[in-house]
Image (cartoon, rainbow, N blue to C red; front, side):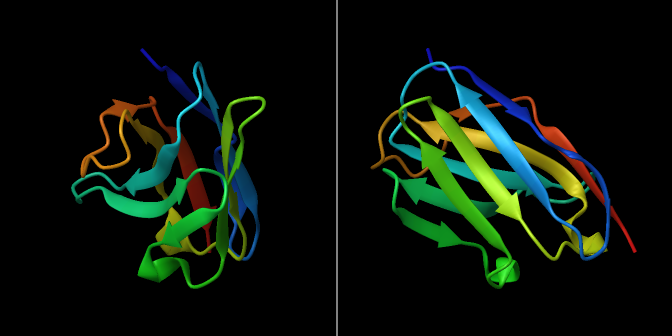
Amino acid sequence: DVELLESGGGSVQAGGSLKLSCATSLYVHCMAWFRQVPGQEREGVAEIEGDKHATYGDFVKGRFSISKDNRNSFLYLQMDNLTAEDTAMYYCAAKDYCWRREYNRWGQGTQVTVSS
């Protein structure tokens, strides 16, 4: 089974940047980043199929970039121009088959806190 391990979260001032990383134990074709605030539903941040086809949540507005390093089995999320509304636990996710609607592999999460 594939294992996912996030890193790179932390505290940053509004307008700052963070780069999240997710190490995977196996190559996965379709992966994503989600985020969740306590008491709220989890929301999709970005998805990537292969290493080029990416989609983003409407709230991203060009501020984030998802990418994969397939050789070294890493997923990244570059986040720029962060706002307090981006404060959340961020999760790396994968699915065994791209045709699946739901992601079935999850990391433990990494906390992102943005202060205004």
